[in-house]
Image (tube, rainbow, N blue to C red; front, side, top):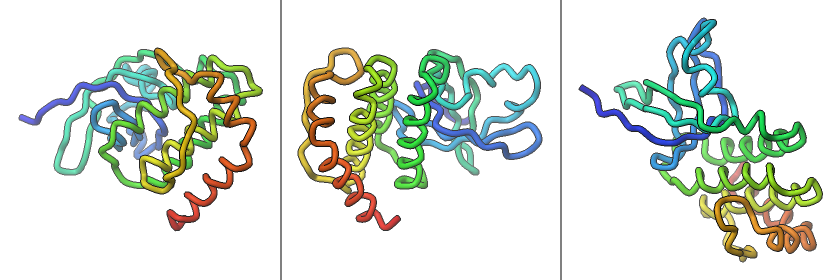
Length: 191
């Protein structure tokens, strides 16, 4: 019998595989970036469908098989798609796209999960004027974890998730320098 891993995960992407199945890209708080197969999730009335939508934060059960991870269960905790306005979802999509390009396989680093979760919370809480700064900060943090940026970032205790507005205001004031660092990190990755 295979071991089951119960963890919290953010659904980054979902790709149809067959008539009823889908491949799900998850960021988990324990296993890092994981790609898993969800059987029959695209059928009408599928129990796991709502918990495996893009930008869903769910409690998931994963099983490691000989062909990779398989989703054995999922319970929706938070639908970030429903909580975020359209411009914030677009920003989240850009950051997710960057992460998936930079880490195309699986990455066993739970810091990815915490960066993305804090970024989504920040997008839900801060005014639109600071959203560009939040996006830049999330991108730089991913680049730092991947070893593609070694510069300093303004840090503050943000409490329970989300970013301190003083940090975002500091990034917004010097945003062109931070964007240049992001571009250098992407160039260093070879993409």
